[in-house]
Length: 184
Image (tube, rainbow, N blue to C red; front, top):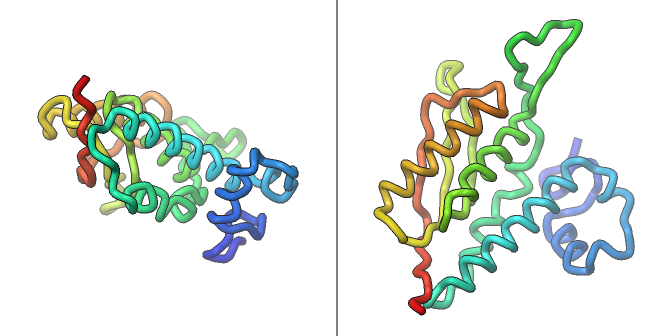
């Protein structure tokens, strides 16, 4: 089990992983490369980097300095595997499960596929046994903000139904940042 400041069983922190990625993953560190949680964090840092660069490139205004820090802030905690959730039809002899961390990644990817949206914080909770998602997003305001939230909610619901054992009854969306696109 990892300590709060390290990712997985690697002994490396989020800052260490970010620096490792900045160095092009060289020299190779087996403790990072062989740890599933570290691999998930590295993939998420790369995803956030690519999406944030896209939003910045499209933005007319400079992006607030702490914006990316807020997005990355809870990353290590959120990428922890969490509980195993069984798929319908699983039996003790043939058990098929998905971790809460993997479900949060499905949610992030579904939200990020919506044009002009970058998913930040993603929490999966349970209200009396019913799944409850709470996410924060950064958006470019191409359409009304409620319409963007509805599109994200629909994309997440479809991805959960298609790819996970979870159907979220509630998907709360907080629009945390609005980044204006450049006018060409």
